[in-house]
Image (cartoon, rainbow, N blue to C red; front, side, top):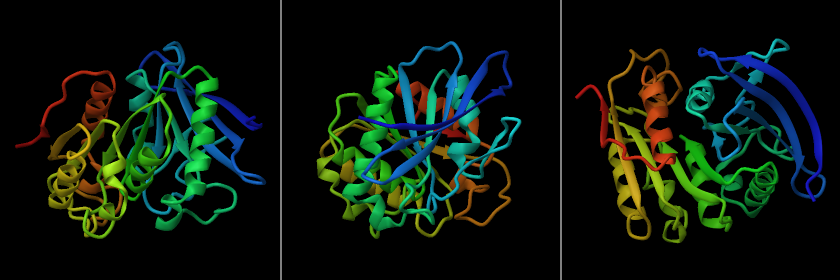
Length: 266
């Protein structure tokens, strides 16, 4: 049985007339281990579709919330949380578990312990009434989303979404891609200049996944002038200036709608 440990409840106003309920929650996962996550849900949308978000880097401290309820974070997924909610999606951004306070390395993202932690979160969301759950990774977080998609066998998990996936040669090919049978959405910027996340490598991963499952791929073009290094968040790697359009593609795919092969400048 899951133990609900702590909840901080605040209301965060959105750009529209709706509001999102914003909570920092904590659940027990493995013996002696807890995991925090940020929950943001549309106020009146009902609990049907949930996205579990895995930001990049080492995953440590992906979000901050002030006493007044303002949420901040540099990662694309955290920056776009409001946009997801405005599209009627509930989002749950995970923090590293309590036994990995300094972050999650590649080894942990591909471990049974990581799968056990997220299985606990999936079970918790099911108890909250969520019927369809999607695993969403950005940058290094795509390792988590992909691995967990092969490992967790739960009928409520309906798909895997990979944004700015790490390169195939040195990262993705070591995962059991042939065991991933969930539908996959890949979104990648054509001009992603991160040394471990090239567009060409993303296409190789798409091809590898297509051998066993259905893969949709959207190429992103354009956006704002970079304000960070190529592998950091305010660049093409983080869809800087294209956040809302990328979120719209994700929301359409989750909703079962047709998505474009390309968005942005041609």
